[in-house]
Image (cartoon, rainbow, N blue to C red; front, side, top):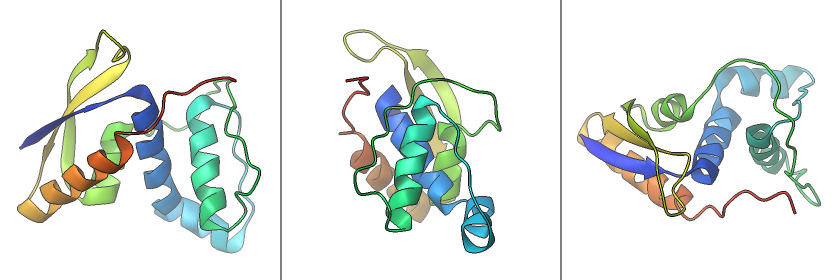
Length: 131
């Protein structure tokens, strides 16, 4: 088992990467129209999907009005992207880690190594700003 701390911005990036690979999203992208409503995490999601479709040029992800919808969190994202299971260990933080989550990831060695690489990639995500 491995544990990771994920900042709010990194969590948004993690969720966005996973949703860009989600089977339901891919199905809609192949045969329909996708509407992404406003929300801070949804801005990251829109950016990842637009990158995937080659339409991300000049896109700004600064959408900040939360709306209700299907719940898909960091734990779901880790599972979808690595195959490992993830559980919440702690939340909160101080000294810039406010809003962060600490998760425990369990899986086989390939899944855990995949999780390590994934968390390393998203850990440098800059803090979300409105300006």
